[in-house]
Length: 493
Image 1 (tube, helix red, strand yellow):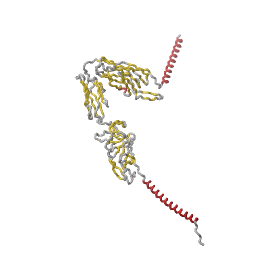
Image 2 (tube, helix red, strand yellow):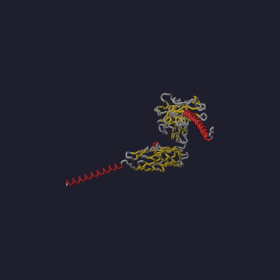
Image 3 (cartoon, one colour):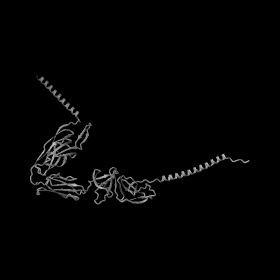
Image 4 (cartoon, helix red, strand yellow):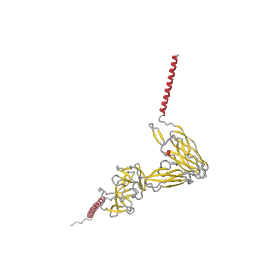
């Protein structure tokens, strides 16, 4: 009996081992077969409308965020339809979510409905070792994400309650998941306030061209930001939480170097409640990033500097900002001129303006007394090298263009030429038309060719004369011989 039991037990153990081996083999085979293949899983996203407000009154601002409970590698979404009671509130503005700054948004508006779509512009596509594509979105999150925010303002006569809700989610496309989007909760706010408003807070505070810190909060009253040296005035954009609140802004003009204080004073509708917001605006003393420099094609290094306020800028050039050699630096540009004007220091000479050609990587110092700025080129008068032969008929002369006096050469016919170098350092003689001011390359006539032609003409003339004499003599002899044969002289007896 015991032997029978042992045999049964052994058989069961063998069957279990065989089953385990088959399972492990199948698992390994499946993993090997599916290696490198992207398998999409099902995922659900809920889109809701939320707000921090608990109650509102006539004329109040409502900021409603449209949120997704998660954002699983979404490459594009929408259109998400945001609905609101159009008879209770009016649309003010739209702002995309801060986490989705790499997405391009499009929105269309009808009465009481705003339809919004978004698409990832920084989504990347790479390949793995097996040659399979790997798609990566620029943002993904397993927690709640604000897609966009809507700012509404209640009408002065609004009462009862105001509702906001998601009408349709549109389509959410994920690179890894099969996403199902559904409508979540909405917003219902009672309009309960009567009488004059005591709300003196702001719904938003922004300064154009810069970012304030900390992030705006209606209950935080002190902020800071910085602007470039060239900025002497900042545009402050505010939106009061209540329509009838009075806002006064001062200190945003005639900014000094260093710290400036901009005040935003808000008085509520009741005339009693006040809020005072302070913004510390730092106007930088330099427009140039620290250690900003560029290297020309010859390997020379130039350091960017701020141009002095009293320096003379060439006519037609206006100041702007250009991205050069990895730095955002002040530059001066002119329509039709390829090169930009930069204020640089080469380490030896005094700082000054230089023309920089980003294509050729050339740097040419600007000298207002001998530099011509043309639409197609920038030319600078330089010394004539000893290897260049100047014909004797050209004598040193000067020509006043109306902007600068050029020192060059002139011949008896009044042709005025200058030896000038372009941005690339290529030098040659240029002809300046005194009437039109146009400039063109000048080529001297080859006197050696003229002399050669003259010599050849003289030689051929002499040869022609000799040939004429020979022909004349030959004709004369022939005619005489013919005459003697035709009319022989009588012999004497």
